[in-house]
Length: 121
Image 1 (tube, helix red, strand yellow):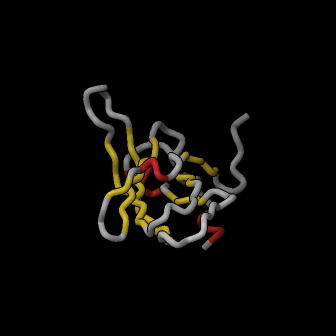
Image 2 (tube, rainbow, N blue to C red):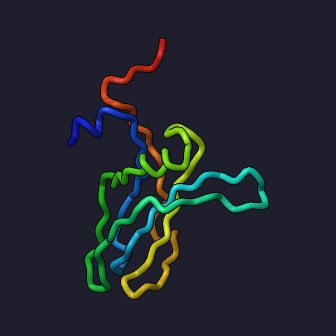
């Protein structure tokens, strides 16, 4: 499975996770800029992950990024993996209340070429 995944180019949303004081569902979206400044970006749901927490938890921070694979979503939008897109999140507590997306640092995007791939000379 690992070798199959490494056999093609991939894109990841990179998150710097830390305790937020509540358990929450982080919904990841891949967004393509609109052609005009009057329209909103076109965003597509890429999946979600869950953060456990509560008011009694000790403060914590991951010292390494959490990589969330967004390859299939980006390709489904018809955008090259090295193309013009960004990642946004919606964060919901377990009771359904939407939390500010600023509660976590804004995710960045990283491109990982397939194993053995070389840039043309």
